[in-house]
Image (cartoon, rainbow, N blue to C red; front, side):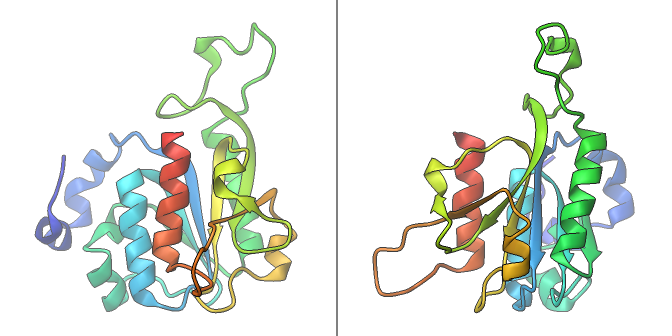
Length: 203
């Protein structure tokens, strides 16, 4: 089922609830910390739908649907991507770890328990320990192409000006960044999220 922008904007969530259950979602979560621009939030919903990720956590000062600008920028995808609000990124991380463990139980490394009948994941991903990755420029970061990725995974994206908070960075497993070769320090958050996310699902 593929819907164009007008169809997505007009469709009632009740009309597609059964169809949404058929989507094979990837074991990837987005955690948005203090994203101020509502158009960016909407764009991230659109990206999340394109990737068929499991869920978005909206945290802190991040606006939530049905804000009119989120509705417009997301072209209605806020209705088809599962999302949840948490007061802090820390709460979202804890929720992610609890939820992902239930949805994607860890696969034991022993030959007997790693058989195909015991692989609990979606889109042919093998579930292991959940991992939290911050996309941020930091002294401890590594290029996004050099990081170690495993599933289920949460990707954290921060404020357009100040980035991810120091408190949140202390809670993550890895920090990755996108190399910048010009004068501008960073990319738009939607662009950054798209680059890293598509690298992960295609590598």
